[in-house]
Image 1 (spheres, rainbow, N blue to C red):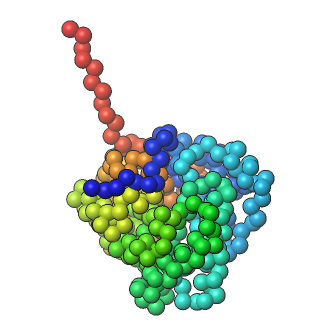
Image 2 (image 1 turned 180 degrees about the horizontal axis):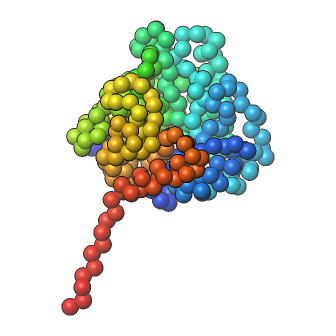
Image 3 (image 1 turned 120 degrees about the vertical axis):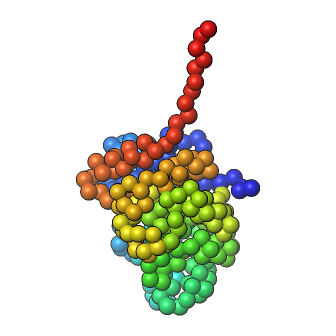
Length: 302
């Protein structure tokens, strides 16, 4: 019997479907964009995703962000440069410093979790990479002993030496981390499909969830990234597509959106923004059309 999910937002309003939002013009501007697409959950970058150091987050920035905030739950996504499994000592040092900064920013902003790509071992081997990621997270947690922000390790598509393309690998990382309460996972539909998980059928979807439960625990699933895939099953190529327009199709999303185990878990789009705002709105509407509503029968007066 799965344990209660510790990342649930039972008091949040709506279906917890949203998108990764731009913060151009300041972090607080993301909420205007969220309102424009009728998001009930969202994700942002708390700093530039392709730079080691971000712009200083001032007291005024934090206050304006908190005052403008109109969506819960809200996640941040860590910089793409961070690689806790790297064999390069300088990059490893910078990765740890950058992740400390990411978690500290999230804590100051009142955000509960940061999504992180686990990392690539760059030829050192999966065992060495997994151990280094866990030990790196221990160092990061030790630097922020009072922080409660969680790190959600994102499922990988299986490209190159990237780790986390199986739930077994993610589970091994979490088991090695000292403070397991500060670590969970984020399941990306495009990535698991590209990694070889057949999620387009009811049986295939259940097998994926069963594997997640066996190695990670369903209670440790903190978020979903909802993306269709340009490439086929097991391609190990990470290319996102609009919902229902890729190789995954609609059934996998219908299965997930109607799974009561994840009703109170945020589900975030990272689909192409072909037309800013309109693309997100269209994809969100497609997702919401898949949610099965309970029909209320009214007995006719006799």
